[in-house]
Length: 393
Image 1 (spheres, rainbow, N blue to C red):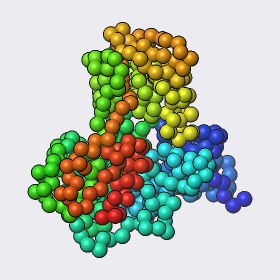
Image 2: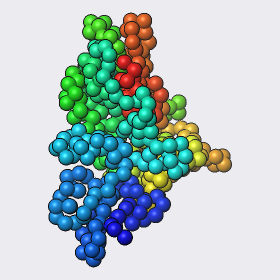
Image 3: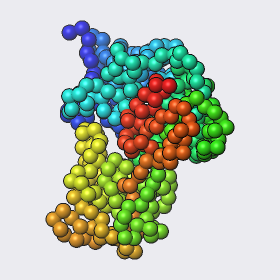
Image 4: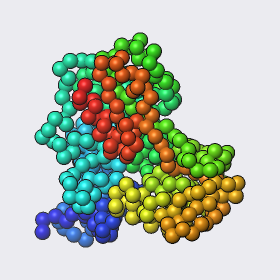
């Protein structure tokens, strides 16, 4: 044996073989000093180790090498950027597990939520300078819009990004709020940092409209306007104590007893967020499973955390009515239940916000729609859509 590799599997088997979101970063460095003290061969530490922490560990004799896996999928140029001191340009891994889930669970090849080029290294998915420089307007500063602006500028285009809110991020600003989301927060910060580096003209607090775009006369427009929130067709959904998940994650106060309608990713993460505040939470999901679109390992870990925390989960259950006393639901077996709730949180019903596309058709020569304004999906799909649109300009 020439070296000892402290891979992620030492922390467990199956679900947490690779450190999932919420686990401490630099995990391998927690044990490598002990291993170093009892062996004479080189020790390789792994476990989502940050470059600066890896350098420090080697300098202090806590490890001889640093091993990286998913971090190099997120940014293959990580070592080069670290060596040259450009840490702010390193695209961080968010630890979502989509890369390994695609391979191990689905057998469809590797991918990366934040690096759409993974799996397409020999194809047209690589970034090349544009043959003709264009004036590009990107409408919307969520992940799809920011990625489109970043890549378009890298290709040499002159890019202006408009965001109606005072800060960039779109729904990522709420997505980073629940527990165990520090990895996603780091990616949001990365995206915001890259725009001035790439000389994107960012204009926040500006709602783009057809007159503004006509005046700008862009060669191309990328629409990344996300979703509009809509309340479901449930009697009582217009009551004042019925809130959106987005408003709750933005800090809106709730009662102690909370019913969440919708057990997808947003509903489940909102439930965990509220439970950490001491709320009594019930999640109501029509389907037979919660968080159905999550990576299997992360979904199973999240579900276990919710149950251990005392969150009530009702699957195969439909909300029939919202009253001042709570919600009335009907289970798959036909049983009617009443759940006491002082606040009802809606975590379903987002619809694409595509009104601007209809207004601009026939006015703008080159028009691209990206992200949730086409179809509400996850961050991987939003980032990939922005990336691909920028490559096609």
